[in-house]
Amino acid sequence: MTWLRHTPSDPDSPVSGPGLPEVRGPGRINRVLAAVRGFLRHGVALGIVPPAVLAMLFEISDDRHLPVEARGEDSTLNYVARPRHRLSEPETQVDRASDEEVIALLGACRSARDRFIVMAMSRAGLRRGELCGLRREDIHFVADASGLGCAMTGPHLHVRRRDNVNGAWAKSRRSRAVPVDDLVVLAHDTYSFERDRCRQARDCDFVLVNLFHPPLGMPMRPGAVNELLEGLSRRAGLDRLVHPHQLRHGFASNVLEAGGAVDEAQSLLGHAQVSSTQVYLHPSPERLRAAVERVAVSHTPAGERR
Image (cartoon, rainbow, N blue to C red; front, side, top):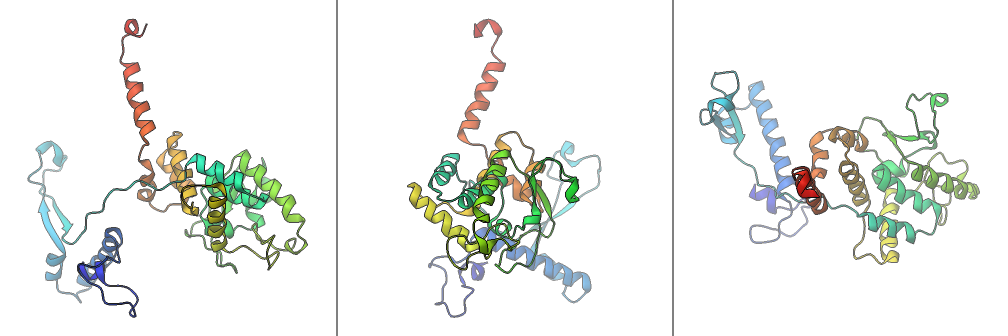
């Protein structure tokens, strides 16, 4: 654990160690340790690693200290293996872009394409790689897409993993359909007219293309999205530089705060594990205040309310 915390990945980096700045955080270290434990457990199962190694990795405990009611219907003694080597991970709030920041970014846009980029990430939750990898065949912004061979109703887009020349990459292997609202459709329609005025872009199958700088008509690279948002943040006079993932975080938080279920947010975001979605469940101070006030109102006698 000490080696993981302090040893740089780059062999040419200066030697580090305890007392110097850490190069890996608790979350990353725990993921590496979990992989090592899984590898060694597999080795024990195959008989190529001594079973005694497991005792070095896991602390064996049982449920005898629990109340009878907490043990369930099975009265047999249950053993639990807890990892010996694990760092405590501090619970942090998700760094999201606020609605005010999104509005400021939209106001700083100088083209329909840039407005569509901000809208697609803040109102559809797309990653920058997913956005830059969109093809025109993925856009189903119609009420009925059955004519396109798609059974999903209402305006939506499809996120698919492909090998793209611009380096864009969809993180999940599984394709997903993402419903979009009228504002995203309007932003895309306006951008389509702007795009059609660029003769070099007419034959490109990618949705997002270079319109103002060479190579004209070629697909945008994901790094250009970061550069765009940094420029928009400065032009809008924001106190910080907004990054693509903060727009996605804002979308996820808004879905849950609007009453969306965790499984709905998970599907919209394309998360393989629900634990990736649960980080957005942290309620804002405003929601906590509203929850307390709802309890006060619902438990106040009608006479006292008058």
